[in-house]
Image (cartoon, rainbow, N blue to C red; front, side):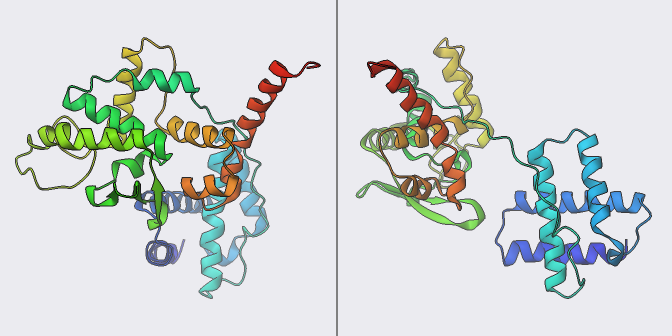
Length: 302
């Protein structure tokens, strides 16, 4: 299809420079758009101006036939709508064929979270006399104590932490930054890890001062998302638990416990770094269940 590669490159520059999207997000956009144009080529549509609303519906039908999830289809539609909106803005097209396409309703899944006794059990497992044990304890205290994303946790640098006021500067999605407070348990764990464990782990590097990331692996290099997943799996094995924990569960647990204890929705939204309140409202389903359990357990006529 003529000019598509040129227009796609312009669009990618727009996402990177004007929207400041991450490389991961940009790659997803490009993949979704290229997927659509491969389909259009199969339909013998060779010009952008020829694409109609009916073509978009045909594309959606194919996605359904491929058994894509609602979430994936929604993402692809959103990517293509943004791309064509950009082309209209740049006066490359007069109409956006995706402007009338409605996004499929997403399945509203209640987030999985840990109960307080399960969290306390995890906090009692690490051997805090060893460098890795100190690292692991600090890691789970930070994840639970701040509710930040695992990727955000892995990107914390030493200069991002302010122990005096108990906050960490978090580098979030789209280059957005926010300050998130952490409690005394997280602070004690971080200080213990920094004074002992991290020094020993970083000393294993050929160049000990080459990075300032807070969390490091057994070789002293920066810890990755995959590394966090491995650590949590090992902690679960030590706990002899059948519980399946994924790293994001700490974020869900943080939000759920905050709301259960009376925090307001806007404050939790700010702490989580959600752009839209609707993203935070999913946790109200969990708190409603919590309130229902309390009612059923304590009301005389329940």
